Length: 298
Ligand code: SF4
Ligand code: SF4
Image (cartoon, rainbow, N blue to C red; front, side, top):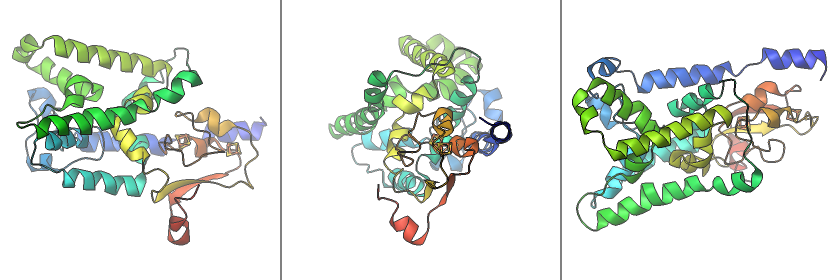
C-alpha cells in the first residue's frame, strides 16, 4: 500500500456509525432515573415499538422491543401483531440491516467488546456458513412459530426467545433490575443462571469474533436481512473505480464479499468498507427513481 493510501485509510473512520449508535442507545434508553430506582419506565411511549433489539425491561427503556412485542402478541391467541409487523417492515424497507449497523444498542456493545486487544478469530467457513442460518430458525421457531402455536391452544404463551435466550434482555433488563432490587436477587433461579451463561458466552465471543450474536442468533437481524436486497438505503460499488485491493473485505465485520455481493443479507451497512476504500469505489444512499426499481435485481 502506498503512503498516500495508508494515510487515507487512517484518516477515514466510521465516526458516523459510532455517533449514530450512541445517539440511538441514549434515545431508546433515555429514562436514566430508572437505573437508580430499579424500576422500569411505564409512561405512554412504552406503547411504541423501537426498531431495534432493546429490552422492554431495561430500566431506561422508553419504548418496547419489537421482538418481545411480536412474541407477546402472537402468544395471545386473538392478537395479530399488525402494528409491530408494520413498524418492522417500514424500517426494513427503508433501511434494511442499517438498523443493525447504525441503531442497535446490542450491536454497539459487541462492537466495543471487539476492541479488547485479544487475538481475533475468523470462524471457519464450514461452520460459519451453516451457522448464519440459525438466526432464521430462531425467528421462525422461538419468535413466531412456537408462541403462535402455544397461544392458539388457549391462554397466553411465554415469549420464548426473551425467556430462554435473549442476551440483550439479560444485560439491559435482568442484571440492572437485580442489582437494584435485593428481593429480585433472592428470587433469581436456574433460569437466570442459564441466561447469564448465554450472555457471558456472547460477550466473551464478541471480543474475538466480530458481532457473533448478529451473525448467528439475532431474530431481528434475520428479519431485516430479508429486506437488504430491496431496501431504499443501499450500498453501491463502482466497478470502474474498484482496483480489487481487497481492503473493503478485510475491514468488513460481517465478512461480506463486498466486490461480489454488496447487497448481501449479512451486510449491516456499517460503512467500514466505504471508509477504507482507497479509490472511493463504494458509495451509499437512498435509491430513487429507476435505481429504486432495479434495487431487487442481482
Ligand atoms: S459490506 Fe461494508 S457496510 Fe456491509 S457490513 Fe461489510 S463493511 Fe459494513
Ligand atoms: S471496493 Fe475499494 S476497497 Fe474494495 S476492492 Fe475495490 S478498491 Fe479495494
